[in-house]
Image 1: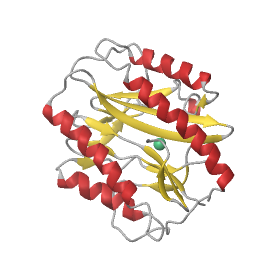
Image 2 (image 1 turned 120 degrees about the vertical axis):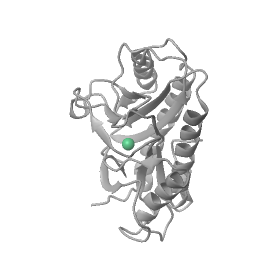
Image 3 (image 1 turned 90 degrees about the vertical axis):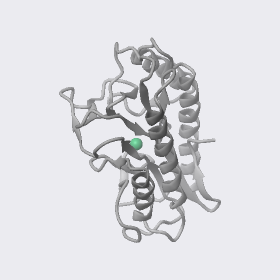
Image 4 (image 1 turned 135 degrees about the vertical axis):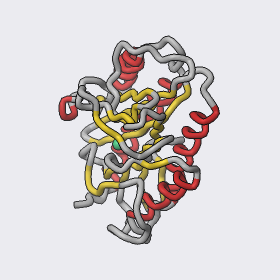
Length: 248
Ligand code: MG
């Protein structure tokens, strides 16, 4: 069931999203060759706590860290640890914050130092595909319009979208109905109406779309070992139109 949010609930989601936004900005400033992904996690913990929120990921189905860090061929759900980022890597940073029982969720993929042209293009196309998807989140449309727009944009650039993991509704729960795939035909599924809050999150592979989960039970990687990028925003449909709550 898709839960529509009241103005009061939206206000709490906005607060959580404000912390998410600040967190991503501050983590972006930390990313450089030599830093451990665990350092990013510790920094995130500190910032979230200072702001009066809590990590929505820590302990979620047993997830062991406060944020997800996914390097290179890792698609999503990478666990921060001793790994040190290297010049030329790309790293997806996914953060979820809860404030007074409501959630915000967003991700960005960052370059570590100087990266190759194709990696840069992958990041840009993924970021832009999120914008395309958000552009279809408007009253009167259908849910599948979002995924169709993401897929169309990504495939026009000869990259591929991941099928096994999808975006989601968000609110009192981190993951609510509906699922928001990054693929499909437009014009089907639930009608988009005011009060909906979605986390839209394209995961884009440079090579084939296939992914698998590592033995740690969390880290999702591309089967062909090629790069993958991930961008996500929490977006609300309100009387003011489409509001991207995790992006200024
Ligand atoms: Mg999400």
